[in-house]
Image 1: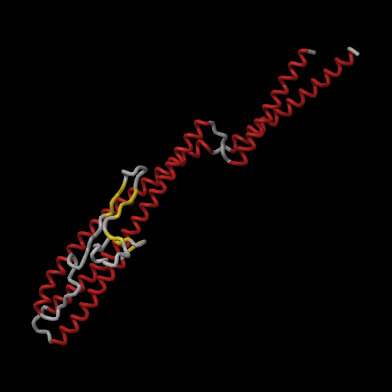
Image 2: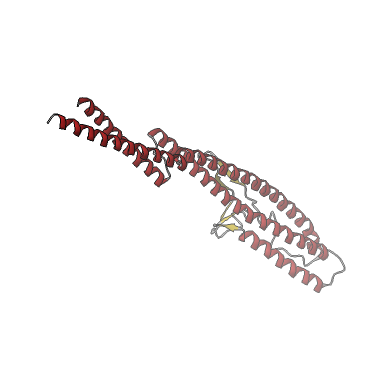
Length: 274
């Protein structure tokens, strides 16, 4: 009887453990996640925080790219208008024009100048403008100047978007006119200088866009790679777990059968001693 009792105790322990394992496997299959130990939980927590950080970086960089895109588009439009203004100033510098001709050219010139000013002030995203100087945006409703983006996991990892910093002197004197041959001739040089200034700013913006796109790609790549590691640690292998569950169910059936046989044998032995 002592032998049977020992086997019964062992089988009971096995049955309890198998049942516990079945519940654990079923829980993992239901959640799609492994049951992790403390060390694994720590690793997943740390890596998940880094994934979130790199995704935030990509979002920040996208905001910077949106701002630079608006800046680039505005600078391109300003270049086109400045070229038109230079052409008009060149026409107005001719000696053979009549007063009415100069008046008409000057009116068109003034309208184009106003468009440049509107483009400069309107090139804003979320109340941020990378074209105008603070003095040009005198009402203070839009932030101007260099903007700092968080492009790394620490406070030291930042990228500064350099402002084009255009104003009425670096682009043109918006209050001037070309109503005389002399003022028109003077404006040719002013507009040539303005075009050179804008061209330089366009090159800076283009370089910044290229750099930010590379940073965005790198941040998303890091987030993807780290997420892959997290998934490897956390996510279940459903096929393997289904096979394990089947094995446990089979083991449970065998254990129950053995227990029933032992109960039968124990009953028979008790009958002998009655």
